[in-house]
Amino acid sequence: MTEGKKMTGDKSSAGTQDVVQCSDVNCPIHGNLRIHGRRLAGVVASAKMRRTASLVIERTVKIAKYDRYERRRSSINAHNPECISAREGELVEIVECRPLSKTKHFVIVRRVQ
Ligand SMILES: [Zn+2]
Image (cartoon, rainbow, N blue to C red):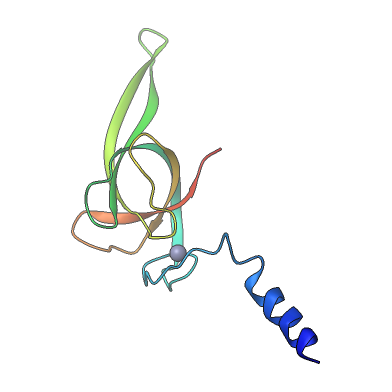
């Protein structure tokens, strides 16, 4: 009788190792932030702000006159949810969302690779 109870207790505690506590209301997975629009990939340049990361997005633009490409880069601020907590140098995917602050309208959805 008592052994059976113990077994069920073990079951509930097993497999919870990879569950991350996330109380972020602006998390696209655990909170209620809806994502829509542009989807970009970029490298985290700075993750020093609280729940915010600054990313560098690189793109190529064709210069027709010389039939060559030039690289352009722009930096975008994105929300960095607790469950992802991307660090400097990591390649992440971001998706457009509603404006979260004056300069933030993207959210990190996953690490690439
Ligand atoms: Zn989360």
